[in-house]
Image (cartoon, rainbow, N blue to C red):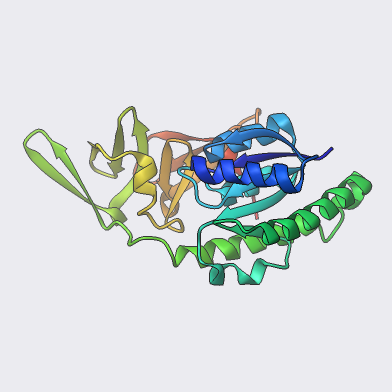
Length: 263
């Protein structure tokens, strides 16, 4: 029996996908349903499913981030509401996707491919799966290209952050900000010479930030990539980063540690 998890931050698409899977692949066991990328990553680590159905864009950690972090340990099928023209190049490749609202015929095609891939994975010895030319390396390249394509559909980028401090409004140009961090109901905004708190939650701010400029490194931390001075890995494999212009040491969660692997 094959197993799977479903991750989507919207209830209706998640419920509809489960219903359709029960209809067209009744022997598939759904081990977990997740509302966020980090929950999906944890479920993949604990449940070790054969397949992960991941919404491409979720608050905080995206489906692409989850796929990067799990390093090919399960088959991935992305779900998305993006226009199909951004995804056509991947329809027959290592990356498969379902366009919302999901059409039964398309799901049946995807199920056939997933069954074949799961069967092939179980039939191959681990050594051959990790041989030179590992298809997971090609998968990562394709996901990076997919991410670039989808950025063209993102909303207009934030250029300024305004924060109220008493009777003063502080203005932070985005290109001067070193990092953002969640602080209870607020988001802390830090530049090299100042900081403030804004009421907008980090998950909403992320939508207006350029993902090539700002990297999420933790559930509650987003940093300017070109401000990163160094990353340090301790004996337990935990990663921290230091930023130019800041004395703070920021933790990197397991979900984003892949960003700091040596080239």
